Image 1 (cartoon, rainbow, N blue to C red):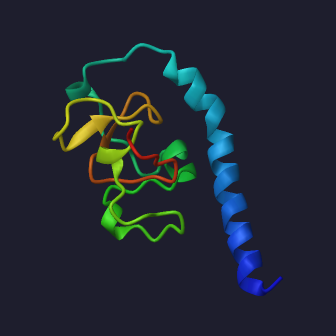
Image 2: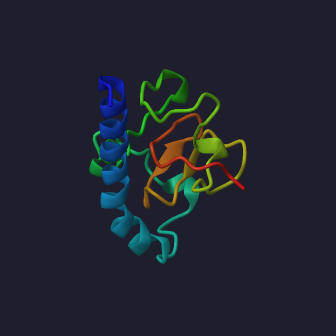
Length: 112
């Protein structure tokens, strides 16, 4: 095994651990009704613990995360909610907050 394989495996395991650690919170929050209308929700603070754990960034084009895929952003993620085209929308992963449609986090999954 060469060094780059070891580093890639380590990066994957760290990312997987961050996602796994956030799953109980996500599952608990998925069952809750919306707290307020989308426009009333505050923007997700970058220092929010969940945002940090999932490497959330407001501008996907500036992401340096190893799991980032060009073209992926919150607007085309399966967890985004609210009307298409809105600059800030609620996300199932960050209950009580709006995320930037141009943003990205490590839990990004392509919208079906």
